[in-house]
Amino acid sequence: MTDLTRLHIVITRPRAQAELWAARLRDLGATASVASLLEIVPVSETAQIQAVKNCILNLDVYCKAIFVSQNAVENAFEWIENYWPQLPIGLDFFAVGETTAKQLQVRGAKVTDLAQAQTGAMTSETLLQSPALQQVADEKIVIFRGLGGRPHIGEVLSARGAQVSYCELYERVLPAESAQKIAAILSPLSSKALLSNTSPIVSDSPSGDKLVLVLHSGEALENLQKVMHSLSLDTRAIMVNIYMLVPSQRILEVAEALGFINVFAAQNATETSMLQGLIDLAARCK
Image (cartoon, rainbow, N blue to C red; front, side, top):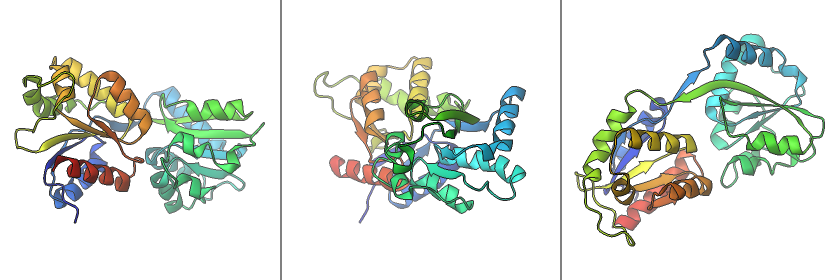
C-alpha cells in the first residue's frame, strides 16, 4: 500500500495543477503544501499577440506542429478554435510527453508517432527520436511554446533542414506570493547547523516529516534559486536539509551543479512517475 506519511511535500507547480495533486498526496498520508514557483499567463504585449494571431491564421502552411507542454496545447487551442472550425488537413501534430498528447487528443487532434510521446523520459530528446521527424528537409514546422522556451527541438530540426517557426503563447512568471511561502517553509532549515560537509544528513521539518521539494521543470528550479537568494537564507544549510525530486536526469544535473545535494530524478514529469519518485523517497526515509 502506498504510504507517504513520513513526507512533507512542497508542490511548486502552477496553482491550478498543484491543488489537485496536493489533495491526492494528502489522501496518501503526506503533508502537502503548495508554494507555486511558476504561474502561466498569456502573452499580453500587442506585438506578441499579433505574432500569435499571424501564426494561427497561417496554420495551414505548416507540415508539422509540435506542442511542448499541456500549457502550449491549452493556450494554442484557445486561438485555434476561434479561427479554425476544423483543423487544417495535412497538418501532423506532435507532443512532448503523454500528458501533452492527451490534451491534443481531447481536442480532436491525431497525434503522430503517439508511442514516442508515451515513451521513457518523455522529453524533447525523446520526441526528436520520432521516425516522422528524421527526414524533414525543407518542411515548415511550427513549435508551440512559452516565451523563451528551451530551443533544443528547434535547433535539431533546423539542423535536419526544416524551416522552424515558433508560436510563443504564454510566459512563465514568478508569483508575487512565492517568496513569502517559500520563506515560511525553508527559514527554519536555514538556521540549522550543518551536521557534515561530506556526508550530509537530511533533517526533519518542524513537523517531524522529511521535507521534499517537488519541481516539475527547470524553470521552477531557476525561480527557487531566485527566491532563496532574495530572502538571504543560509543556502548551504537548506541544500543539505531538504530532498528534491525533479522530472529528468538533465534537471537533476543542473540542481547538483547549483549545490543541491539530495536530488532524485523521476522517469518523467507525469503525475504517475513523480508519484513513484515520492514513493521511492518515502521508502528511503523509513
